[in-house]
Length: 423
Ligand SMILES: Cc1cc2nc3c(=O)[nH]c(=O)nc-3n(C[C@H](O)[C@H](O)[C@H](O)COP(=O)(O)OP(=O)(O)OC[C@H]3O[C@@H](n4cnc5c(N)ncnc54)[C@H](O)[C@@H]3O)c2cc1C
Image (cartoon, rainbow, N blue to C red):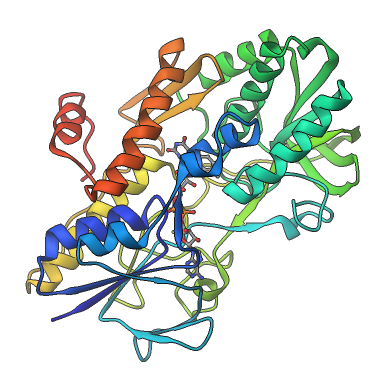
């Protein structure tokens, strides 16, 4: 009997645990370790930040759902991974041995990259966790009471997840319009992307034209190639760069509320393992999602190392989105199962991407097959249906994670008909 440990129970870790249970049968032990005892549906955080959802709508206790599938759950933070003894050390001193380790720890939110940034000790908000989104909702309500002001939304250098920043800008715009007070607020989108719609992906289909058009139509100004260098209370210090990386202009942007997505890094326990990660702490994996140094360590999700799509004047990273992460997970699970069955692992993920970006009352969907260019399919479309589809997706994904099924047959069949597969 082998013991497979999944470290991190987020968008990647939960499906990984369920898929492992299906693929390995009952003779192998599976344990999931997560620093919190609850699952949070991260894509709904922008709605929490404007009060359209609350914590209870988008979180649930992990233990009962995993245990129903005969998967052990430990709520605890991993402090150290020792690949020489195949052992994890958790906060409080507990140790856990593994035969195979699947790392799905997501990002370390590295607010420290920019002095004065961040929701805890700094002056900017975030929507990356439900705690952050709740803190933003508190300050957003204070601003609504004040009745006017400047709202800055965007992404800092080394950010690699731009979709949620656009989503949040349009959602706030929509919320203010619904309250009939949009005319009292100035809004500015400030991003490290080289152009609007780059998304860390070199654009997808007509994302540049379409998102510029949307920002203009919603009276949201923008500054791109923007390196946020420092944040004081109520003031963002930003350097704007030219394409040749020369400094174009410095900006001092006074704000009443700012949500700036931070740089991502790998989490400390993972980044500290010698030869496991790149210098920013992201796990090296081969096409099988297996670490080249430690062959019994697999990894999937935001925590893996992917080079940026292209060098940009202000550093940006390539995003890892939900379906792409599920594709990584399915590949890794097949390979662990093959190894345990004494077969040669061979399954690679497609890294196909389907993304729904909500704009509050409308939205934009994109399909990129595969996510990283050059692509066979690149498609970016806007419509009210996207807003409804995103709500449906939220309910669907949370239900899937409670039922313990990573890829129900109808999901697999429908997407296959559209030419979208995970592996
Ligand atoms: C605000 C926001 C909105 C997004 N919206 C979308 C969207 O609409 N569509 C889409 O496709 N993608 C979206 N993404 C991108 C991506 O799908 C999510 O970031 C996704 O949650 C990443 O999954 P993950 O499993 O890699 O990491 P996470 O979901 O962050 O999970 C990592 C887990 O590991 C745990 N962990 C970390 N370190 C430790 C440790 N040392 N010990 C124990 N546990 C640990 C964390 O607590 C967490 O539970 C969004 C991202 C953000 C930030």
